[in-house]
Image 1 (cartoon, rainbow, N blue to C red):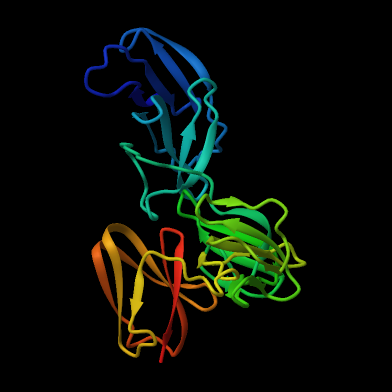
Image 2: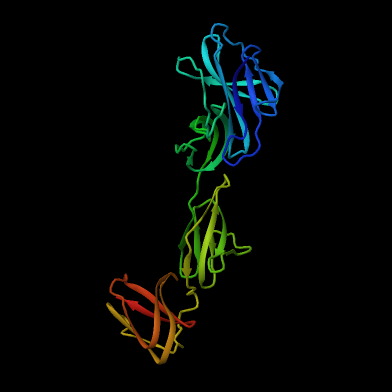
Length: 321
């Protein structure tokens, strides 16, 4: 006895369909070829032990426009509760999805499903080695080695249990200081180093010592500790002043020298370019743009000491008092 029927490809514009039926008496699915007035061909039994006291059941087919497949669903009372099943239209076999009807006997179903899944929670394991604090998938921050668990929603919005086997190695902070007027020193003590040319963004082959005497330029250092954790320092502009003593052959004048507030730089003709103010350790204090024969600098806020003015590879010294 045919209890319910459903068509495949039930969407606008379709010109091909197949009619499936559910036989209440035989507890089986059939296919009618051609639809409506054709011969019934057995697909297979549902495999469900239907409640003999309540054989109410219904059947529907939904066309999934995302996956481009027909999905069949079946509601029946199995002993005590109405349940929803997914049906394999090639075999008639069913797979339970869950309860349906909230205790009310289900007589008819009409299925329109955007997403359905029989998978619930998931579990996975992460093996992580990190330098310093580690931020886990759920946003927790761990600073010590250990085994931790996180629960976050998976793609189906069920719980995803993540076990994290975490090893935390000590982090490192690279620093760069001017040790004197001829060299740079890398920190921290005890690390290994690799010097970098910031202008070309390349390593400098062979330069791996903690203290280095470079030519004038822009440099940084990579520091690595015994746990293989690394950090790169900020870039530092450095002016090599080792050969400046007694240098007077320049084509510009500085006055007054010494000075406490203003310094005038005067050229014999119009000049254009970048002029650098450098401290006694070779650190560039500030850059100035020159366009003319004279430039006046406000040095009021400089600490007292020896400074240099560099322009077109010519360097002159002045004293701030």
